[in-house]
Length: 266
Image 1: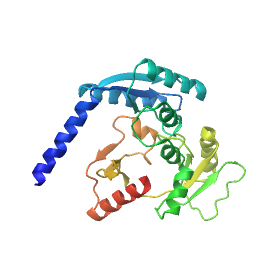
Image 2: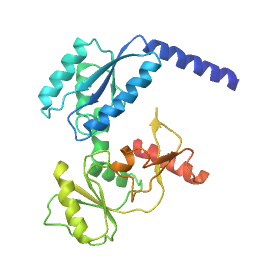
Image 3: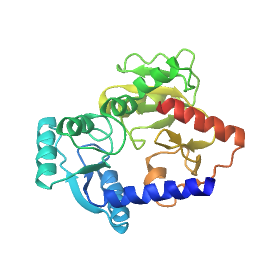
Image 4: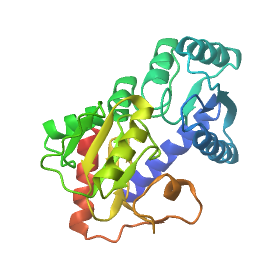
C-alpha cells in the first residue's frame, strides 16, 4: 500500500511539473536593495536550474531605482509585455522580501513563489518578528531597539552583543561587539540602513537553519564557519562556510529545531 501511495504521489508530482512547463516563468532578480549583487547571483543559479529541468524561463532584472511608482510600473508593464504566467521571486531585501513586490503581484493577478505580502512584511522586520515570537512563547534572544544614538542604555545586558539593522538581510550591517566603544561605532553604521537598530544578547552555540516547504520542516542544516559569526563574508565568500546535513545534533534537538521553525513560520 505504501509503495502504491509513493508511486501515486510521484506521478502527481511528475504531472504537476509537466503542467508547469507549459507556462512562462519570470525569474525576478536584481532590484534596488543593498543586496542587489547577491540577488543577481542567486537568480543566475535559479535560471540555470529551471532551464536544465526544461522550464520556460524569462530572465527579468529589476531596475535599481528606489521610486516605488516607477518599480510598480516597470514590473506590471514588463510582465504583461513578456506574457508571464508565474513569477519566481529571487530579489533580496527591500522591495523583494518585504511584501512590496508581493502586493504589486497580488493586485496584478500574478502567482508567485514564497510567502504572502503580509507575511513577508512581518518576517523582514526583525522587531515585528521578535515581538510575535515573544507573544507566542517562541524563544528569541533578549533585545533592545535603538533609534536615537543618544539613548543606548543597556541595563540588564552583558557583552558580547549583536548589533543589526531592523530590516536588512544577508547580515548587512550586523556586528558582534565586545566593548562599549565598539557598540557605539557599530550602532552608527547599522542605523544608516533603515533608522532603527536591534541590539541582542549574543548566543553562543551551533548555527542551525530549517527551511519550511508547504508547512512542513525540511532537514536541519548545520552551518560551520571559522568567522566569529555567520556574517556577510561567511555567507558569500567561497570556502568561508560549510553546510552539514544532517546536522550533528541529537534526535531530540533536531525535533525541537524543526518544531520551533514551524511555529515561527506559522
